[in-house]
Image (cartoon, rainbow, N blue to C red; front, side, top):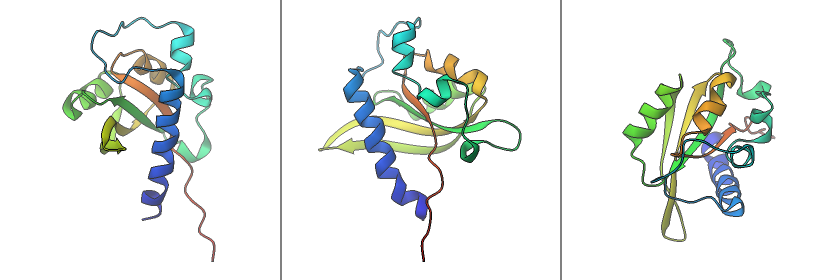
Length: 139
């Protein structure tokens, strides 16, 4: 239940990054080769540095990351793309809507740090970031 309360904050943050970076919201005709600057806009600073935070790290060394896709990519294709880069989709976040407009779809994915930058190079991917830490419950 606590994770659902954090979801809007995560999505607003991701959408803000997308809008501020000037990313397109459609994946059609995207070039698979990205410059370092373009890649910088698609992956969180921690993950780009190869630093999977402790709260997102699994015992086998993999990590839990949120992958945001362009809105016109089907979930089936998004899952196939994640699997192509050795990821395991674990949670679908469908049709994220802001002001009555669908902006993007997202998956929470388990994958190793070495595969994250390769996935980010795919034109279908908008942004990849580590999942947030569990919320603190104060009594």
